[in-house]
Amino acid sequence: MGMAEPGSRKRGWIQRLGERWGVGPWQVLVILLVFACTGTTVLLLKRPVVAYFAGNEQQPVLFTVLYYLLILPIYNLFLLIYGALFGQFRFFWAFEKRFFNRILGRKHPK
Image 1: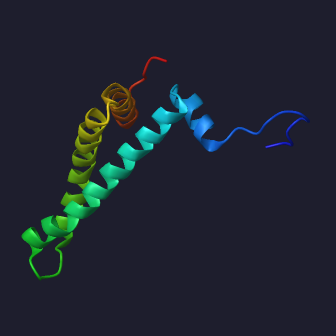
Image 2 (image 1 turned 120 degrees about the vertical axis):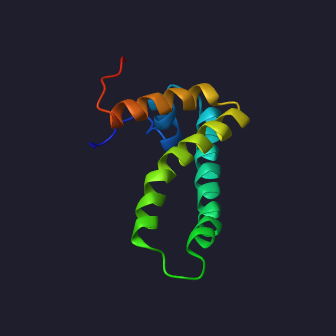
């Protein structure tokens, strides 16, 4: 990026995210909180799930592959749950639709 013109203010990262997502600064913070809660929940669930299926033994390769395949829908489900709890369901529902459209190679309307 080039130098800012004299008299212009540099935008902060929260403002840039808000513009990208079409939301205000407080909503950006709530959305980031939803992402943080979702990631933490998935992280905290991993150890007991692995212990249940693998016990004290080495994780089988098949389990590792299945875990990474299944974590995507589980993560997205928690994203919607936390989004609803924090009043941002509409944002995360649209986020999920865009995400899965990209994965499936579908064009999405702007």
